Length: 96
Image (cartoon, rainbow, N blue to C red):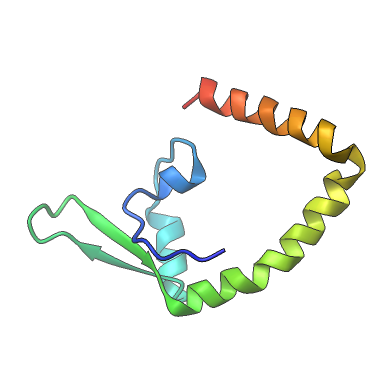
């Protein structure tokens, strides 16, 4: 999966309301995984972009995470997985 667009609202990707992102963003920035820049017109707006290094790290995580998910949920089969996805999506939308 490739991420190319700048991320202006990290909570959109997390799909939940997030408060206090400064600490996690500080740690990501310290590891050169993201960069932050303030909008010149509106200093309240901070644009966060993933770095090339961050993209490489994400790429290395794809396979291990996929294997983890198969190990945890593969026994459910396609029909039950679809039901689980639908239930989780419904629960998320109720609290968005």
